[in-house]
Length: 142
Image (cartoon, rainbow, N blue to C red):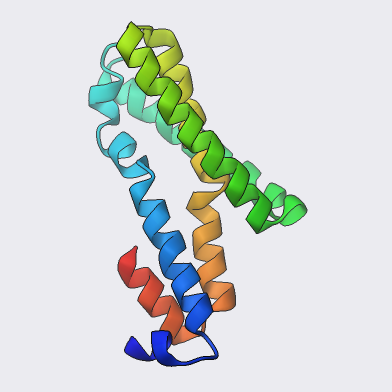
């Protein structure tokens, strides 16, 4: 794994893949997915909340495939990370003002944005630009 960061042929790609993997993990999607039943208990029963989240997760991932190929990885990453950040800020504001309906909407927007960008693009990037050593280094971070 050390070779991925010392080999001049793949060093930049390995660091970029590690950075993308780190950003993907720290963006907050795991918290929302793991605590979806708790987050949405004020709206639905836990099973319904999980079903809604997984339906949005799946449908966004399916729609993202042709969108990624059409618009490109880098512009989509910039746009979707921006949408993720703005939707999380808006969610925090909605929690503060106790507007539960908008809170739900912004969380679902966050999930959809994640599935258009950081979710699939990180894995596609790692497999395309890194050899086995770089991919294993980036995957170990993820």
